[in-house]
Image (tube, rainbow, N blue to C red):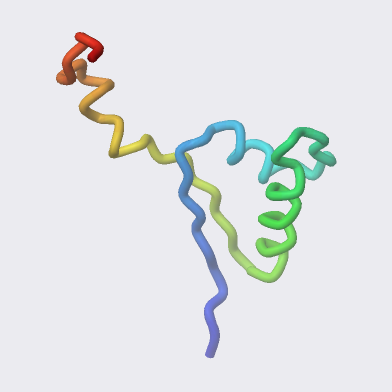
Amino acid sequence: MGLRSVTIMGDSKTVIKKCQTIDMDKSIIGPVIRDIQKALIKWEERNLVRDERICNEGALEEEWSRNPD
């Protein structure tokens, strides 16, 4: 009895979309995309989910100071 499904969560909409396509990615992150795609082939069920960055919540809610040093 082994694992059959994997979920990869990321905050980059671009990376998630590129990983879901079968087109060859020629951008600078192309090799990373291909590595992810190759790893996903091994799983019966694979989910790529975009998740907002938790660490940026303060910036998104404008709670941080706008005065630079």
